[in-house]
Length: 102
Length: 182
Image 1 (tube, rainbow over the protein chains, first blue to last red):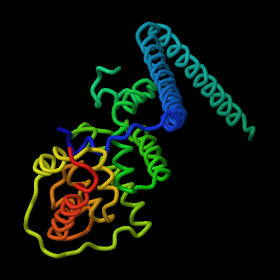
Image 2 (cartoon, chains in turn purple, orange):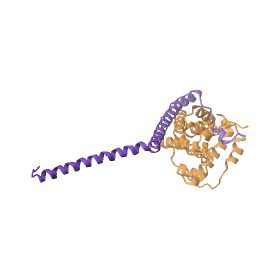
Image 3 (tube, rainbow over the protein chains, first blue to last red):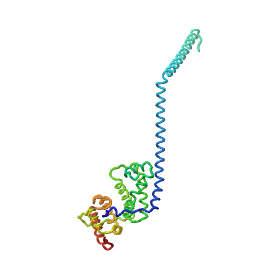
Image 4 (cartoon, chains in turn brown, blue):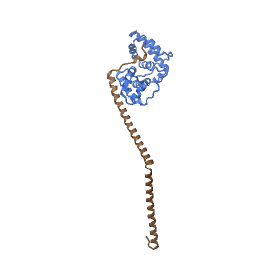
């Protein structure tokens, strides 16, 4: 015996089928493109993040002594500047003693 | 692809898979198109609405969550689109609200009507029912909605819905023997 649902079943024409499938192709292609672009950015951002981590790690743990050297060099420079300043002050004091105003 | 379930096909459609879409289309379009065609009767509009429906399925595929069946979800989308069409053409004009308390079941209807008459004749007779009766009997018979659900969807009282289905059945009982009997 047929069911109520069989009543409404209608085979669509081939033209209608082609029309729907052809419209669907465009929509589905747009989805694939959107997904490909999204995947590209996810890959690019995760690669950039990975590179950043690797770079930081290398800098922090593998090039540590170099950083210390750089710090020492910077301290040396500050010391030299301080000595220069002291020398200038001593020169001013001597000039003042001799009564020369600057 | 043909062995995959509706839910699995929908997931592939959400990824842009054309084969999955074609499989889903071939599996269900007969009943979906037939449902819209039965509800609104106009062939061209039925084709337009069904095409729009399939495009909507693609757009909603990603957010589709399997809570029940794909077919039930699809029927809801089709019904909403068809009702918009019917309301735009003022095909819903209120029902004969004579209170009818007799409830008939789909199974009884199938035994009484479909066992006695040719399916094609029953279909033709349903197509000729007044709009309100036709819509009510399709929601009841095809989607198997309850009287409460139909009353909500058609914005009619439950007794009005019962009345519509009762009268639809009466009309079919009268018109069918003239067409053919098995």
